Length: 171
Image (cartoon, rainbow, N blue to C red; front, side, top):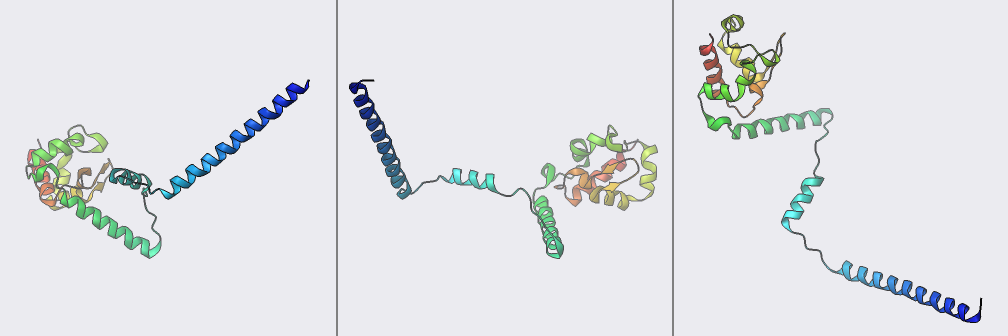
């Protein structure tokens, strides 16, 4: 290697070193400016962030947990009552056709079809028992009836009207 090559490599290394130092100085300056500048967040971005980081569930333990669970259950029931299903209609046919018929017309999940032979023993128990099972749910030998047909926003009057309509419609 001759002397010119060594001089070139020395100057080139100094140039690269200077550029690295300049890059570091620029990065530190940008960091200083950005750290002193307040961030602006839109309300939508803040709401979206809060929704992403909100807890999915809660853990309850002991007597305190039991009380909190009961309070949460009561709050959910109260919220469900505030949102009455099907516009609050008391026409049992409307509720049956939109909700109950999915199982009671096809027999899905062991639900008895609207046939006298299947309903005679149930009707013999009395209307109050039928209404209680419809409202609170029931687990029998042939399947499970979810509370309020799986729609907690049905109110008591709608449940009564629907059960009455079903009993009156049995063939």
